[in-house]
Image (cartoon, rainbow, N blue to C red; front, side, top):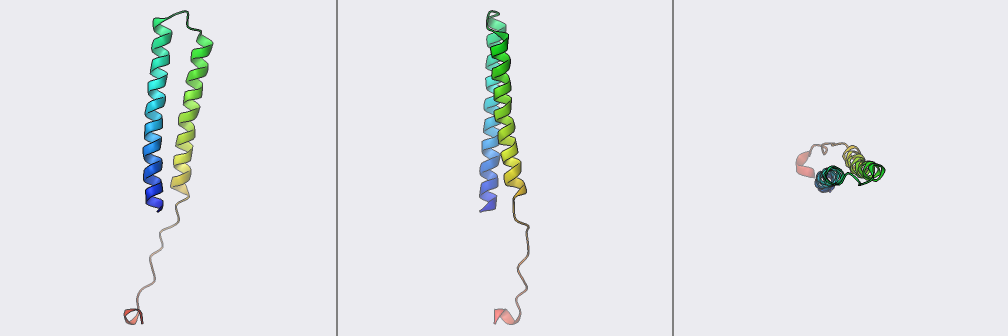
Length: 81
């Protein structure tokens, strides 16, 4: 169960970071292509996207660190009887 949660968290985090980077690239291209695009809007959108990415990273590390410790089962004695 925990492994499935970690895989899901990893996939969502990778996807979120890729979307954030793509969004920041689009905003940067808009700013370069249209100089009249307000700098304050571009900066605030970039900061918001970075916060979303950091939120997903924090969630991933939370899922990763809340994993229960791996404890081996007790040895079977007399074939479990």
